[in-house]
Length: 158
Image (cartoon, rainbow, N blue to C red; front, side, top):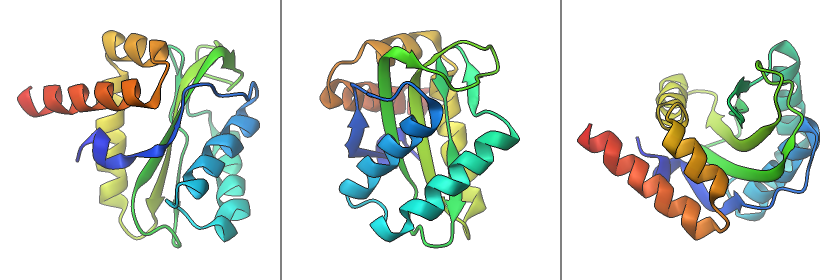
């Protein structure tokens, strides 16, 4: 599985407006809906599940990154929105620092193995300092896509 297969190009937000977790989740979810990756009538369910998941434990794992994720029976393919914030989002991250890069992952409920593969691919890239730094510096969706392509190539090679 590749990052470029997961990320929805129309759901890459390089100028995230939200400064609070729930607003950032809504902003990214709306971009996935606008890009046709998920049905609009599921917005309330999905947002509720994401907020519920965050209350159990933050998906802000530190180093300026969060990977909120949810599985739902009405989702038919894995998709991700990527949000970048220059000011940072209060995400109750494990290191108590603001989050600057968010990868919001939606997965089909009946394919948990695909969800785990997607999470693994995302975390492999986000665990690298260079990837995180370049992602945070990206100012256009094209720059983010190029970075994802480069990360995919490195994973295939390595």
